[in-house]
Image (cartoon, rainbow, N blue to C red; front, side, top):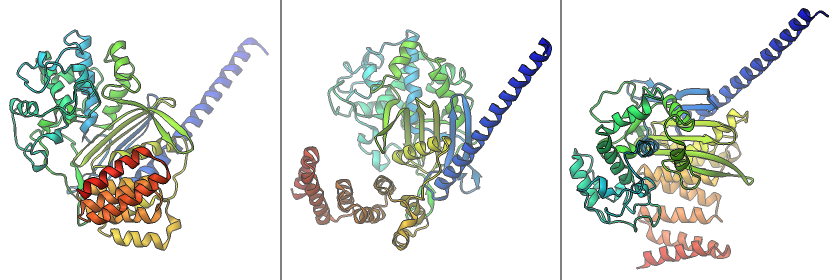
Length: 486
């Protein structure tokens, strides 16, 4: 065989091998796309999650699509180009902005709040540091601690000066630096400090340092007055079935804590750009993603059945009618982004995220969960019929206590406590020896005014806790029973 012919054979073999690899990868991606699409459609069909979904492996987007409607009145579909409120997923951007200002020499994490905001006369403002604000260890209350928060006092227009004065009136929940206590107010104040240091609005400071460098053209600060192309409307479950428009929120008071909007694909640009060192110094990156002590993110292990676990970096957000979740699985380099507009809760988004990763890896869907069947029944205003239908054919559905508990929680948050009680009673029938099921039943019974029944459920939980020698739960339940008897 002459050398020229040998070279031809070798090259042909390489081409064929590469073609086989490309074909195999393409087929695998097509299969993964189909499995993911089936899962997304299941969540949408049963009104558990609707919005935009992105699944990526490394730098490659495997799936990017939407389900449900961005606007129900006009029938406009959800999808990758639709912009959704990020809620607390905003905090990762805000934390990065603060650390960027540290990198620029404009700020030190040891600086005090009062050093940058002299007019702030709140408790121990001369001791609270930027580091404590960014880590939620300042001791400040959450926005829900503001008097009038739940009665609409802060849905009205309010100046920054007046809002900061209201925040300053709140007593601290703990000494600065003593313990973690989640607070949107920490990040609102950080945003105002960033504006002072840069001489720019929060949005312009982010645009210059993060959005533009990463090519994020569909991300910004949400306001009620601005016209934002492709912005989704938010929806919540309605008491009579179906959905209703989410209530009005004055986004100004959420600020750097929760006011951004974005698309799934912009969020992917954000996370990949951040993690590849395009925004922050190595020192700031190490601080931001320190396991167990991360800033603007959670770096943690998720425990799965059969003693399995997944190493993740994640964060989520929720605000009336909107929910968000970004998760990166460290070992597999898989990223899952969920931006929704029916207010899906954190636990359900986490479950969906794991299932999307499993679908990417070729796993088939399990049987339809009972919680999905009941969610659809609730939104059809037929919850009791749905419960009755389950008992007629119980083997057709998979039953998991966690999913039922999460559904009960979601219904309660949607201000439908009696429907939540129906789910709690069902959970008790299915898991009579569960301490958790008894506790959740007690809480819901008390909420709807059945105090005696609530005490009975607490006592049942106490008996189970005593059998299990669970000292912490025993102490908690004794305190709750005593509280109700006072």
